[in-house]
Image (tube, rainbow, N blue to C red; front, top):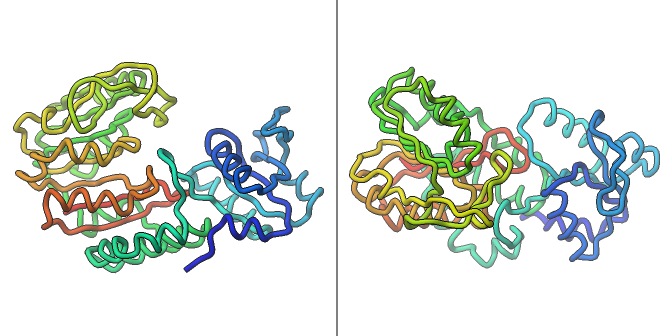
Length: 345
């Protein structure tokens, strides 16, 4: 098993620099500070360099830091799936020691060797239940990546977003689709594309007000679509909510918003396919669909990258409700390990 990234950084004599700013960089800088690991600089992509300070360091370019240090360790502090960004990261990696630290989007804790050892029986159980070799390979590569921050593990297991639909997630033209975390309608449109424009009904929920307005506008021409401006969680009612930027919205904050559980949202409707991408609320959302899952066994796509223990807790929670699902795991091109999903068929 790989070494913990923090242990590697503590032992290194190379200067450590951050690539990027924002929330991810803050989380990484906080962790480095806690471990008494020194930062020596911060840079942005060419064209994004501004007269700005981050953690007391002037924002500069990679070229300027290379002139100063020659050899360094680069920590990538943002997420992206854009080909040109991934290509640039590969270029930097050909010149420098580079890592993409895994920090949870929500919640605390780190994915370390110790975390894996402490939960080795749970990891072994989930591994044994995975339905195909690609899922097992992805599971192993994700563990090694999360511990080490080495990008090659993700590159080695990534697949095209089309692959699941060609391998095991077969959709018909009579699906009843439930989109939890529908954002601006992009995944509704993808679903319609995957079913060649044929489906029975769509139920889509999005809590963020701005995103919900975009969802409403972008799906206005679709038939048999039902939209809900609500946070999907374990029980219906109201919850505090943070209206973030785009996909940055999440439970917790100063705004009161409607909350729905799936069982109440569908009220007897028999879904055939449910997509969960609810910003760290996946476990509560699964619990709120208990009756629906037990009665109808819908196909499910569940995001598995928001919390530190998602690889374990998501399949464990689903299997409490039904133990006859086949479980698949896939990772699409993205750094860090975002766009990683479990599929229950």
